[in-house]
Length: 131
Image (cartoon, rainbow, N blue to C red):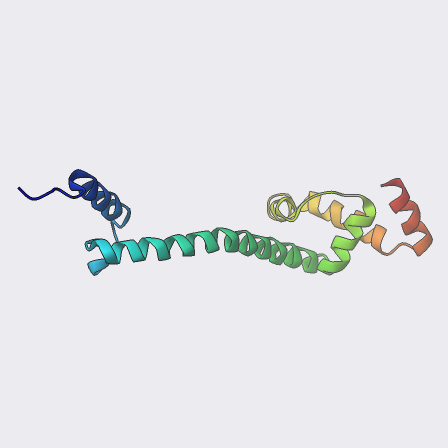
């Protein structure tokens, strides 16, 4: 009787690989070797795109804030500098949500930021000293 090599373990490994490859088109979903290659490749894409998603959202928030600032007659860079000088610590995600859902509050934030950014340099130093 020939020696059994890996019997059940080999079948379990194949099952595990093909389970992970469910939904892949053509041979990539049914052949063990091709499925292994595609699973590895998919993992690379998933790893990369988890980081890219964060960049994409930040760009979206900045675009929304820029549009809201332009509607109020200021620029994004001046607005963000004014926020820093005024000591308003809101991240871009929150600013984006406020700009969309509560325009009156965003108007107040823009007014404070604009006042802080257009102040004289000596006044800016005093503002920074407080913060």
